[in-house]
Length: 236
Image (cartoon, rainbow, N blue to C red; front, side):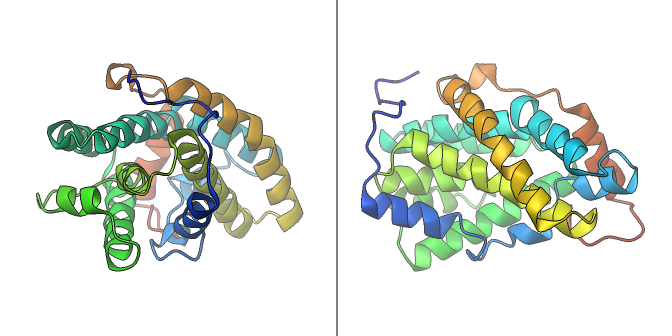
């Protein structure tokens, strides 16, 4: 895909680690806790009722759904930003929008992307991300994080791994509140996602945009149903 290294040989310095910890922390003001990625409907429908079914649901999303697609978007956006290829970056940003399968998933991706870009611009700064935002088009969250990471020299693989880990952790957090699921069971699921995350990033970070796509249809359908769910805790 590129001559830029995309393996764990890239050293993550202390400053990069601090930035990732801050940007992908639940405390970073992107409102991640308000989204469930359709999981709330899966819980309502009885598809997710305990730790085992939650583990299967999240693993499927990571391997076959938005998790894999987001890493491919992330890797290609990171590379384009690192090479200052703004035409390519705009193409990737547009594809990120086109890939949102439902109204709420588009809201989830763009609202977080907008909040992330705005907060980073006012704090750490990210010239390529700010330039991309000047087009007026919405930026999906994985593209926004990727461009900021490239601007700050944060290596691709650690940055993509941190983003995907944060995504999985947010789904677990939603389930802890909505199933309800105990905190310990939630952390067990988070721990079991570690090899899945490693597998997805190792494969997807090397793929071109032509390989993007998903097959987690149950999650997409759950997101559609969530739009009309009567009682809701989450925005998606």
